[in-house]
Image (cartoon, helix red, strand yellow):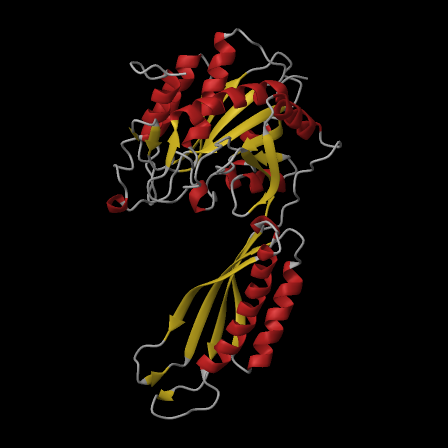
Length: 397
């Protein structure tokens, strides 16, 4: 508990971290790296920085275990945060203002600077208690997660520096929960983004031309939106958003003037495929719709993520058994789920390392990427207690 006169040092460190504006676009990570180096030195931990590209640092802080031959545990977080609309915030989004209720307002309060500091503060307690763990713990602070992690975790997992860490299991970010049930993410949907391009007869808009781009595009768009309706219906039947495929038309493009029938129109879609959905089969169906619409209509794939295999939640996964055991000791309620978005965990799972997304922020509205993002200081401090026990359990043979 914190006193009215003195703020807990962990909370102060959290607020200092939040005050560093590692915000997109064109993030400058230099001040953040200096801050993290200071934290590592204050705990007495070795600190390393690797650059995946110029100005793209990966920070690794390590607590060595007494059995270095064992696989290590990676506690990962990202340093970057998404842009803000300052005029929509009650307080400066990089002031880390704390109100009378102890709510700390800042971009990154939930996503996910809280978790990075909670990791370090839990390890600080290990050091203060002279506790030596069996397994080595690595804490990573990654760049550019919010823009896909291409020059962050996606690159780092392919390097000899990553392989030298000998990672056996990874903890990453989760989401807040409005009640006492904490989401536990053991997998993610597959991102698939594409355009439908339609070409047709151009001309003056006072005439009724045959074979226009618009009518052919509309045919395919309606088919895709009907698919969206079918998926949305699953939510009303009680399925979780992570277990269905989300389909959203996000871009409409084309035309130059209202009285000119355009030669080409396009619609862009963002799709997050459920783990049991065959992307190639869906792609074949949409290509069939394009052919059915008429000549000059095509599907153009913009981005496809490789499908990951979810981390197992059964007796074959000793990491799950340890994690679950510690949560049961603390009487925590978990909701195993497929993450509706995507985090750096997907790159970890792609190379065969089990990973969980977990952020203990109970009784907290989900405000990541939203205005007035905040986290209560007591929720933050309770999270350190939770991580202390979970990390100790994971790192004990």
